[in-house]
Length: 114
Length: 115
Image (tube, rainbow over all chains, first blue to last red; front, side, top):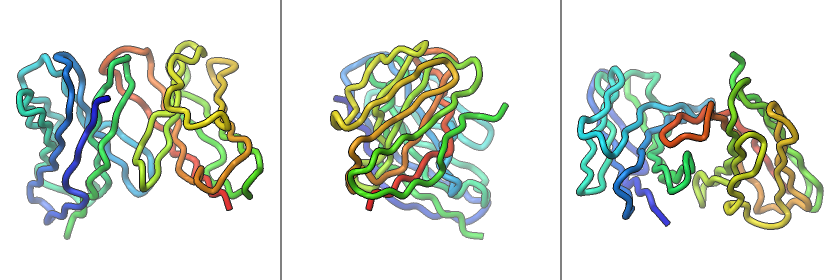
């Protein structure tokens, strides 16, 4: 089974600074999707960004961007101009085999220091 | 749109009791997912449905767990009998179609505590 590893249980960053969250995964497939979901204190999971493995261009959504290294099986999330509202747990997820069957990493808790 | 609705938000019960968690997906969404989140195991997919039909229940931990989707606007996850190790946050999510890469829209979760 595919696995997803987030090696940083906790990260902190100063407001307005840039932070990068790491994620690695294990797969033998060539076409797949990767996601970053955010879980704020309200508990509700929200999609931040997604990347299709066949697309070489890194996905971006406003202040959020990814660094997708397919050969290295790495999928990091960069948050620019960090805001207090970015404080949350961030989960990296891989779409396993069947459509939309997600495998999540253990999460990284991001703290924003004012 | 009201989003995915789950009830109750919190449930406290005693070991051996039956627990029923409820979910109303976003109107028009054809796929529904049940997840469990614990500190030890993280976020795990339990079962998912497409057009009210269970597609994959390989994540359901034991026979004590069962899930149904009698119609497009309602699903239940039942635990009978409940045990303390079932304590977790249970999430329901829905998606417009069962297509690779589609976003899943999550509900606020039900925090279950089994004493």
